[in-house]
Image (tube, rainbow, N blue to C red; front, side):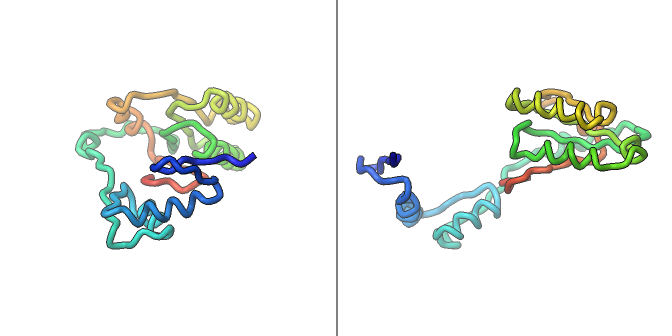
Length: 169
């Protein structure tokens, strides 16, 4: 069974030929605006000319973080903030923490903040238990972006353990 796609004029095209359709579409673009150099380079690799790309990074209002007063801790506090889904690399992060010796684990904590696929969240929590990390790893759940400063003031290092390319990490 071969899946078919429809072109803009209603013609049917096989999935195997979608790259041809994609390249033809790239030729029609006057300007491609990308939120990162990484993504722009992927389009350039697929045939759009450099002159047709412009990178405009997504903005972050950093002034809202300027007043953060860090809380002190005897432990180094690592944090992950984002979606809790497989390709974000949380499983690998947990396994890496489990490889540390007891003395090192006692000197650190890992806060995991976010929401995602409940099955995967449950799996990660079970993995924490299985790996003996209940005293080290804590799941905080979802936090409204307006209150994320409260999380940043309670961590020392942010970790981005993704196992696939991130557009704007």
